Length: 183
Image: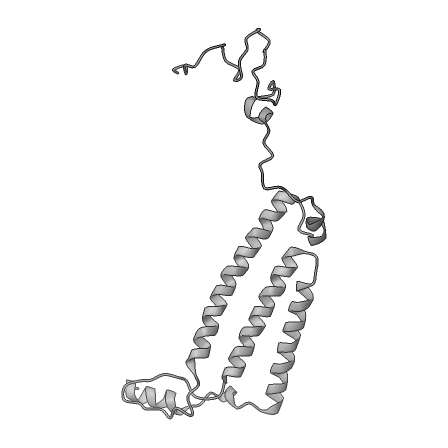
């Protein structure tokens, strides 16, 4: 087939599944309702992973809703060489492009949220929201003390201490030594 004949075929054939009967509309409405219900159920759980998956399901249900409301009736929106399809019979490609972008962004956001969830699990040992909410709030200041900086023999007040040799020194080396040994 020549490109002109192919473009005529594509613009002349409407999508077979686009003829929405009342039965098809009912099925789509029920599926969308179930997806939103499942997503809402998961968002209300205490487990952070389930919350993330609930948000992902709700966003995909929204994408499906947008595509459905954008219209699945009409022919393929391909403009080929010299073919001028009737604008009333061509489906709008803008809705499909926006939903495709939303799917990609949603995938990235879901992956990021799951990585953050894994990091919360590593830090706190749990992903239960009730247990995470009951944890005492941190002041944002590091928990490092003078003893973790100066070594186990530090007093914590920043004053030098006397070690086993009788030297007063903060860092464990000979008193008054500031040189670094060459290896």
